[in-house]
Length: 187
Length: 130
Image (tube, rainbow over all chains, first blue to last red; front, side, top):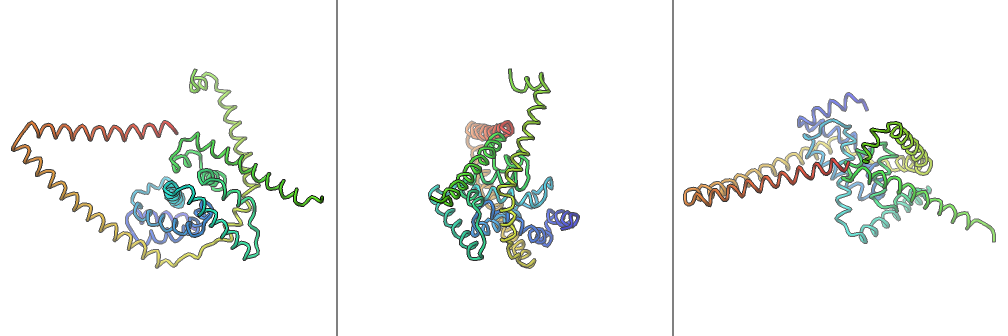
């Protein structure tokens, strides 16, 4: 999309122009949905969060300071909404829902005759407090400071979560590979 | 000796550490790309949502703005009603007993100062943590 066009929309939207805001939201819909899907690994939850994020963005558009891109602002809102929701939910229920969502994603992939890679399985199973900073840092390329601000945790905690999380994922994937090799070996 | 002082006295150690950190980050980035990059990109490609029409977004924006305006007016009315009630109480107190009036004013002022101090302490703490 043309950057100037987005800038124009933002300028008008901040001044309370519904049409420009609608255009901005429409153009960032796919990006936001894909981000929420990777963060939640749950289609239904991702759809709900996209809608909630958009409503929050409409509510707070006048406070958008244009220091970052509009899409960055949206995913910061979405991340906070997701974290709030997860903190309110009981661990057991959270785990059950995550398992169910993961099963349905795997099923969908199988229906389309596609692989559901171990890497995505491992990423989905790791806690959301680890998955989010890892995705934000390495997939989206945000700075540690921005991630710390969105997650409302100290900078050191973000760094250690990313470092330890990646180590944990590496170990899990290596374990999976060894298991697969052992099952293939002839007796 | 604090870390800050040590860094000031030994800048080469700081730059070495920064370089080491950058190298570690680049290594981690490469590892992430190898392990997850292509899978996440494929996932992005597979799950492209059907984007609703512009009309639907416009409807959502207008409806939300309308309901926000309604909520704002409701809150403002409530605020004015409570304000009127509190102000008339204070005037009544001033007419009847000036000592009680002074006590209530001091307590209100102290309460608001404590509240403001707590907010700024929390802000400074958060800034310091990062």
